[in-house]
Length: 328
Image 1 (tube, rainbow, N blue to C red):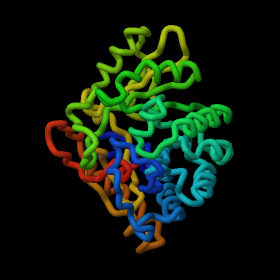
Image 2: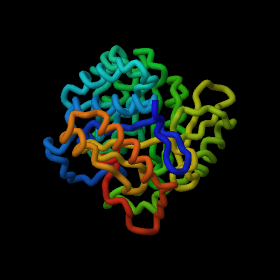
Image 3: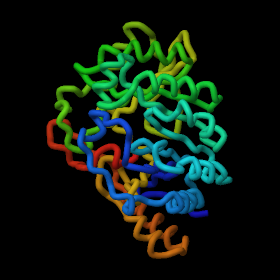
């Protein structure tokens, strides 16, 4: 078996797949309020996604995360999940969701082979939640989290983006929510992808160290050696099994041991979250049925994976695609 290794010696064993750029929310840090989504003919079919995923697994990828947009609003996505859940060499099929569809889909996701679920939750106040998501219903998401917790996934984790002046007063309430439900929680620094108008990113940016300092006013935290296969650094409470993770693309660059690539909904293989280095896999899968050709294109793409990303909050975004186009 050929492993995927870039020119810096980093082994790629984790693929994030955006199954759609569409979402039933319009989170202020993720996309513009009036989004123009891709025409359906430009989106990979579920069969094309499965084919590409299978080739990646044959090349040593052992973890696949399904993202969006909101992956669970893609029509017939459970068919894809079920087929991917049966891939014999795939160790972890995991999902990131806004939680809106979990009340009626959590059980099916568990039965289809999803091991872990991450749910985005940036506020516990219904009005603020609506403001941050522009369309979201907090009670629906909370019901979705509870539905997932009833299904005995390996883990259900909360993801939160903290924006100074908008929801930074909810750091401790979100931590208490996670502790009460026995889930882990990860705080993610806002990533400067796409032009947004809701807030000034440099003014709202809250580094992970500041979030951690707020938590430690109430709860001592001890660093752990936990490696979830992604970029988060985890800390453990002294009095709870709940762990707190921090993903810090600005303040703690995690590129040195990057093991990830991303497949966008339109079939672009993104070699880096913060760069535009990419290869068009849609063109490949639509021009040939020969998986050896697809396999070689993927192997060759590792040669253009850059050493790191460069984010500068003072400048205009260098990456014009929004987060919903990227695959989380």
